[in-house]
Length: 93
Image (cartoon, rainbow, N blue to C red; front, side, top):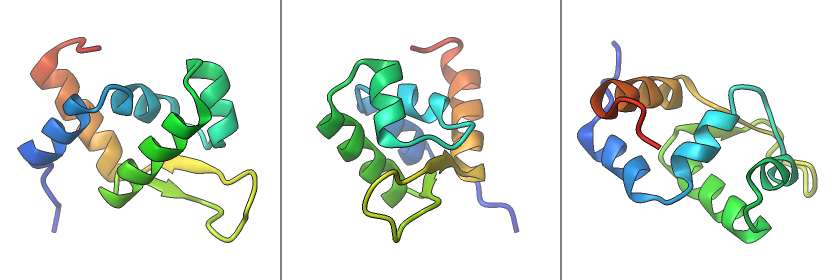
């Protein structure tokens, strides 16, 4: 059974200042350091945002047992969420 993306999930991403930016970068697995470099955000901001997104099930840590160089990737739910967000908001930034 397909899980629908809820308006709450869409609102969650819209409310966060950096959530959509980080989600868009995770089509390929990346570490927080790579995301920090690409976005020019503080490392703590990237880490906090990844934890928030992971709790919602829109990103997944591919190397959860590693202390350093953890890789994150967007999930199918995250891809659907971004797709729905684009439909609702156009080119929302």
